[in-house]
Length: 338
Image (cartoon, rainbow, N blue to C red; front, side, top):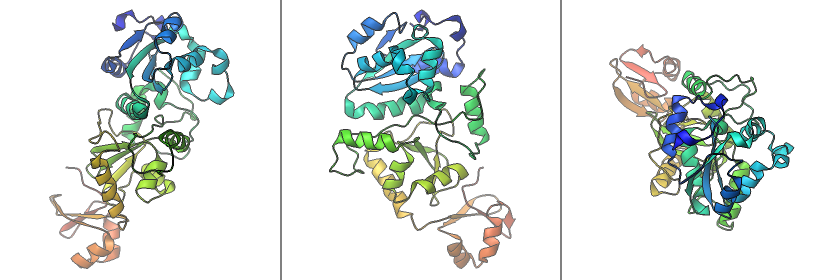
């Protein structure tokens, strides 16, 4: 099926990652040429709610509660040239390469209350190029890990980006039964509020760096765990363990990571939130190992470790960042790798 997509020669070369990602989509409908198939595309999808993908050798995933209307906008150069849309990579790509060099894939039709959840699922799973490299978000002073750099390099092979290229995954929204928001708002109002305040999703990992869940935004997470956005952003930037149990990240640590909890409205998600809230008294946990790097204890903080082990506060604080032995113990602020 994919062989029939009409792409110009300049877009034939897909990375192995993107080829795999596209094949995983299994769309319900394919329109080989956005411009030539526009009449049928709009006719088929009038007032339909769907997750869609625009692809020209790189891809973009979006959602709409009126797919025909969204496609009309993408076909309208006056809309594309509007300054309000100027920072969107997919808009720039449509203007640069033309609609006739894009295929449109309808990934799935879905009810409005599940649009955001399913869009988040596909973005988190595939990291589509035009979603990930989204301009308009300042990353000045942000230091990426080597793993993140490698991932971005893989996503952007053969491309040259300015220093101002910003990295984030398109903000996603939450499910219909989300218990965390003001009940006086309608569900549609909640979606608009969350979307307006979201900058990028937050990937929550446990202390062993296993992906637990993806939250739609820093603001959303801060509200439900009784924290604040500035604190969460600091933990993302510093890659530090939050309240002794969780890592936050704006990008997955690995491309293959799949969240154990697929929806923040599930009971498992509520239990996770309660665990994080109940750990609010922990500023920096201390993990204590023997010389063979076998975990002996986890303390809620340096003061507790000092009391139990009869080792001075200053000594623990000195050795914890080093992960080097002091006597019979190794102190660390996080789980040590084998």
